[in-house]
Length: 278
Image 1 (tube, helix red, strand yellow):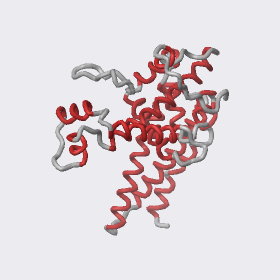
Image 2 (cartoon, one colour):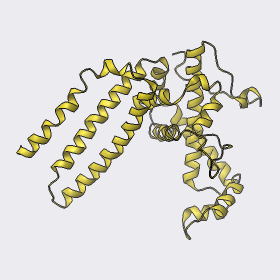
Image 3 (cartoon, helix red, strand yellow):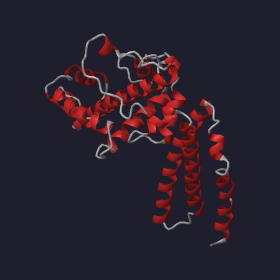
Image 4 (cartoon, helix red, strand yellow):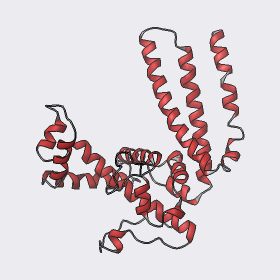
């Protein structure tokens, strides 16, 4: 090992020492602190991926990259420490433990939901959907304050992508819901059910000529990427309705009101909360 490597390696010790009393302290995190750590985790994850890309680029150019190696390694250590801290935070909550029982949901996502959602302000799942930017009737008008929580909306996108990745697992629930919903979306799209949306997108945005996206809109259909997102959001909304049910029951010891489509519109089909009672 070179002297430079030894010097850089010695700098990891304070980071590693952080783990010694981490679990006990993490149980006492405030909601605001947990929210900050979730944001920090995803920022560090992006930084580590960027550092890894830079290291590979330098390796191809045969340039020295010890400092970049050190940065990537230490960012990974911090990521794992934060993940461990958030794991301890969510472990203290039955709602967090239920969420992590779901295939595709880990400690960071589970802690993020606990940190971002106040169940006392969400008597129905509709409140959470709107807060997460998943209510299509809510529009962010120019010059107005954003009507949803940006961090929670991004977290929901991460949840949806995770469900897509685990859909082949035997224990998966929501990834399979995504797959089933996408079949429905594709059939409706082929039947022209989204023609108005396609025409609106074609009229309000500029699309490059001779692209599959523009061709789909011109044919009165949505492109595959939007069908993917529609099915993904639907699966996430079902998951959030189950999360709200668990959180509401844990807080108030009664079941929450049924969603409007079930209680008022008479829709008979209700997807039961998995792993419940927990």
